[in-house]
Image: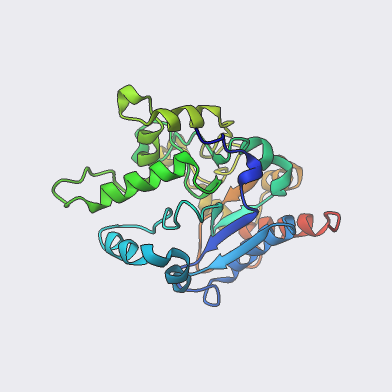
Length: 278
């Protein structure tokens, strides 16, 4: 029997992806990448693009291309089980050093934020968010997740269940379910051990600036508030929240210099710059 994975097995690497290449990425995303490097100087923050895929995937690249033809959104499980470390989307804003919280959160070698209850596609069933995933190489959860991803997208359209836009999140829920519900026992037990850090929309946590169902029903969108100058409430939250590891923001082409978006970014960069030098 293989020894249980631990945080010590997680390589100190974070992958940040912009498909078209970081030289074409908007300034907002480039600055978000900067926050990961500033808060985590002892981690290797690797900014990659589609052009890196052949070298990273090696012999699996042709299979990736074939499966990609059938996918309707960007792949988040493209790297082989031996290469996975931490994956972060280009719109993730780092708010705390990884070493402050991740060793406990990923104590068994795997971590994802949970639960997300609010995305309309989830229909009220709790799921992870897939914008930040941590795993040790060969971890049973990510190995089985990748296997089920390959199986799902290898099926003909007429035979493939429609898991909608958030298919990768739903496959994860299926594989970590009890075996009586189609899950994998080892993955079910491993996921049960992972500490749960909430990612509810509109509440303290990584999805703070995503509107929950009540707000959406009322026609309110938190993203729109971020386009305007910051309110006093938002300023206080940005200055006082020292516990949230990251905020998931949305990309916008045009942002005014006095927008709340830029305030959040500038104050976060300033906080990171104040950390003791390693």
